[in-house]
Each structure stands twice: as structure tokens, then as C-alpha cells.
Length: 345
Image (cartoon, rainbow, N blue to C red; front, side, top):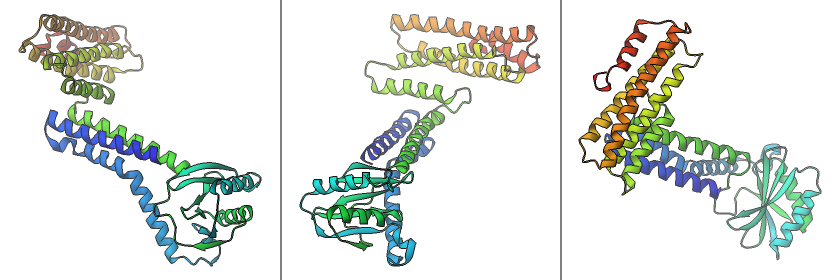
């Protein structure tokens, strides 16, 4: 649980900090409020679920009749009437007894806040726990009718007598373990990835970019802010270079045989939108005080951008000429705009 809590707190905190940075960098706090909320939810989710589980269990036990049949067995807590002298020897004796009992699937040593203990598994994902208080009393807990059977096994292995109670002697809440912890961990990671993705979606809402491309562009912006050796011109040139690569990729995607006329035209439109953004970045860069190397790079990118637009137009034309797609008025218009100068399209 500690590892999961670390991932949740660390990842959630990072998402919240990213939302704060994005607000400062891009402006309009409302756009990144969902990102911050997702980060907060991811950070507190494990603790919230554990606390809710503990509260629900406590409430159920408070109104349960400990002597009323099968329902009384579920969630029972068994505490030894006497204390033990050597917790390690006691746990090893319990472990040996459980391993020889066919009613249980497995038993594993576990480390709890109060010290060593055991996790006993049976029938798939179900499990019970054997823990020892600081005063030396053995505590058996679980959420299944098998908990009573385990308490009997522990009593026989260590020559103890147990009282059933609703009051857990441990002040902390029961940890989430086994399959629920795995599922919760996966959900938290997915939540963190969604939170990170919402930054790119809010910063660059154009549908010309996919989530991965938005993430890369945001990463370039972030590097420009945190890296003292990267100035604004270098950041703009890096973004422009990446956008030119996207336009190049559109030329390849146009040639995919599964793309019909509508998809081919859409790829052309996306190339147009991305190339406009790249041209705007390069134009803004020209207004900066560029070093000779930066000026040369800007010139190369302008040529590459023009070549990439031409390649997309040529690929679309080839699809029409080889008869794999039908030419439409929209497609002709997109091809004409791609062949025009970036500033005029």
C-alpha cells in the first residue's frame, strides 16, 4: 500500500503542479482546472477508498450480531486472550500449520506498521491476516467466513484462546492488498495518464494533433521554461521542426490503401492546419534576435515545410491518378492550398 500511496501522491502532485505551470504558461486557468482536479483525485483516491472501506466495515460490525450465523463470520476480528512471548516463533508456527492445511491456498509473510505478520489466501482472491499488537496479542482479521477457521488454526498452533470482537485493536485502517490493490494501482496510473493528457488537449485543442503529438509539444514548451539554456527562439524552432515532421507523416498516411476519399482529404486538411502553425512559429522566430545557427536552422525548416506540403499534395494527386480514390471538389481545393505558399494558405 505504501508504494501505491507513493505513486498516487507523487503522480497526483506532479499532475497538479503541471496544471499550475500550464496555467502560467498558456493562461486561462479554467482550461486546466480539470487537470488539477484529476491530480487531486488520483492523490487522495487510495486513502479515500481505504478510509471509506474502514468506515463501512466499522458501521456494519457495529450493527451486526456476532452470534448470528454466517453473516457474523464475515469481517470478524479475533483477538487472543493472552499475549505471546516471541512473535517470530508464533508466526512461524502459524505459517507451518497453514501450509499443511489443504483448506488454504497459500500463506505469505507480510510487513505491517506494527511489525511482521502473515497473509493467508484461499479460494482465489480472498485472504485473511494474522497480526500481532505491540502488547503481544495475536489478531486474526478478514472479510470471509473462513476467518473463524483460521482463528481456530492459529489457536491450535500457538495454544491460544480467542475472543471475537467488533473492535479492531489497531488504530490504523486495514490495508488494501491482493487483487483489489492491483486494480486500484492500475486505475490510479490510468487516471494520472488521463490527467497528463488533458494538459495537451487544453493547451492545443486543434483536432489536427493527436494526444501523443500534443504531449510532445507541451513537453517542448515545458523544456523551454525549465531549461536555462533554451531560449524562446530555440523553443519555437524545436516546435516548428516537430510540426514539419507531422506534415511529413501526413504524406505517408495519405498513401495508406485503407483510406478512402474522405480520409485522404482529412489528412490533407490536417497537414494544412499543422503547416500553418509551423509557418506562424517560423515567422515569429524571424522577429527574434537569432544566432547565425538559429537563422540557418529556420531557413532549413522553411524549405522542409514547403517540401512536406508539396509531398502531401503529390501523394493525394497520386491516389486520384491511380484510381484508388475518387477526386472531390474538397480534395482539389486542399491540394491547391497545399501547393500554395504556406503564408497564403
